[in-house]
Length: 409
Image (tube, rainbow, N blue to C red; front, side):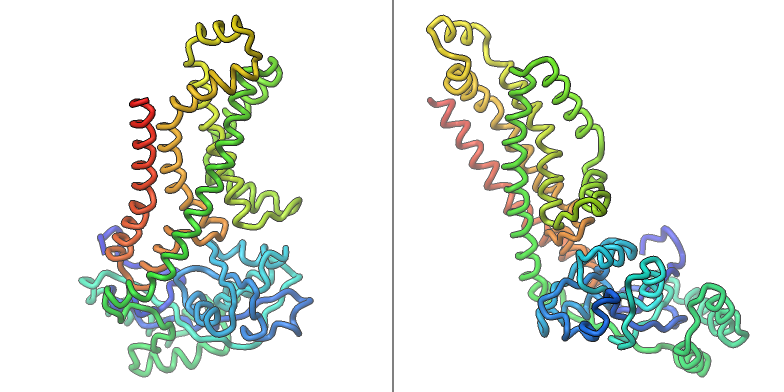
């Protein structure tokens, strides 16, 4: 749409959203949606109906995802959305999910990489790969269509697909329709592109609310973990022995010096061979450990900001170090740290969007799926932004009230 490139042509599915907003070529490849299971479950899980209550992996904003959303309503399946087409199959082999639904091309590659898996013969749906261009490039789209038809007639496409092991018995019938004058093979996906923006918003609003609830719960628990660990680390750096101080300092620098996204990948995918953390727990642990490093620096600075004269006076009065911490130093440090803590909680609320890479469907990820399915970011973006503001503004308001109350005191 922006003109960054002229043609998109890489396994793009023919969807209502794309046809509504873009110039779409004729289909050049027909695929089936395939159910992949573990070899041991091949007799048990033959159809989506057999997977009631089970976790089934796929990619977001695809025909397969739409199928699983329907199956969620009909059979109680739990869709698990991934960012790539490799980890669904590796997680299936590890037992994190019970099945995968994706294009036959991806399913066959997944089985080749993981011999313990098998593809069922049942055809769940049929889709097509197309090229996409900007609406203003309709003339170029027509020229691409002519090239594709010629490649179908002279066998060029068949030779390419045979070279890469993608040719199958579904393609000749598609090519016959395309070269016989038919301009479309029909759109198999049932998306929301034909809905008005208001109808689409009504349809997706409950999903956004559920995703927002996950965001709030995850962020709150992660912040609680970060606060507890941050206090522990800060106390160790202020009161601990030299060895403890060095160890905690090194930990803080390592965590702050590496990306949160990398830490999430390591926790969820990197440690899978040793310990298989549930996605939500891995997200909670990753966010909590990351923000604990930043919180500890806030608390350490706040502890060291308390005037040393007050501490000496408390010792002169016979207070123990524990009493000094709990009655004198700690309360004043907390008062100094409140504003930065509030800022960090708001930042964590937004950084929680990164956990979608480990299959947690939070607010931003659900918005991305919404936008992809209707073919526009305007309405989903406004709704998502409004929800984030509704979550963060009350928190900031409460913090300001507490600060004003302390100042009056």
